[in-house]
Image (cartoon, rainbow, N blue to C red):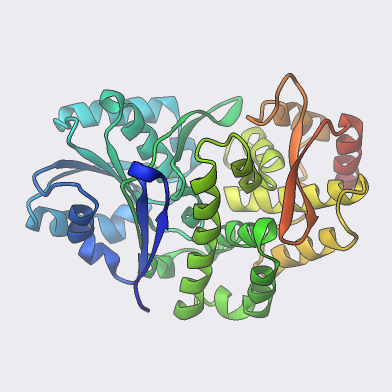
Length: 366
């Protein structure tokens, strides 16, 4: 597979997304190209699963090119996006002697990227940061500069906007993923089509079987297209004052599911898969979406082996309360990203809470 490059246009803070197989071997050259001098001290943040496969080879490549590279390994899973782990990483950065010319490298999935990015955003009031995603799900989270940790009362409530210097996406890493993680990643790939590109949704549907088998050529195209949709939106609305909120299709429901299950039962992709189905059902119920959007959304999730049924142990009332802590909520009024059609979504405000509760109760009853 050839190397593809996309640019997130943000003026002086513009950066490239580099996508291709075997890119970790070229990491040092890509860092230099992004403006991170080979004399810099680096801290690689990764999780225990990724470390087994990729940490030592990356350290070797970086050290051979002059970088002073340190590593910090965290437990895999959403529970690591916590204040306690954040404090530990800040301590490790201090002990490693990182300074204002240093950089933090996030080698892993969305959890690692969010956490390492928040460390970079706040260490010495902000140092350079590089995203090196190793999961399909992270094709979304690694682009756009949203970095955060969780609070027990809500996901990503403690965070910042801190853009990476470069995103280095080695697609070879995806072949070692468990199928559950592959499915989770496709939730975000499909989401990008649902919000902005109906033709892309058709293409995903036509190629679902080969994509599920991680066909290298098609997978690269899917990742490139998903990243391009997000990059275009982020370039227009970096700090989510308007259009960028559209990227949160399914997330108000999904984040509530994750928080109420203590980030342990559903992974992010599974939670937003159910959330996107609920958003489509609400949209049809209020007459906002054309008929058939819900069924098409549900079918797309099922094609990529994602759940669409209500998480059985959660009450609709508890979910609604958790949704009110969503960052789009203003003055206690819910705002949901809803589809009008496949490939077209809008933020809809002031939806009656009883209507949302009614849809969720129907899901509970099956």
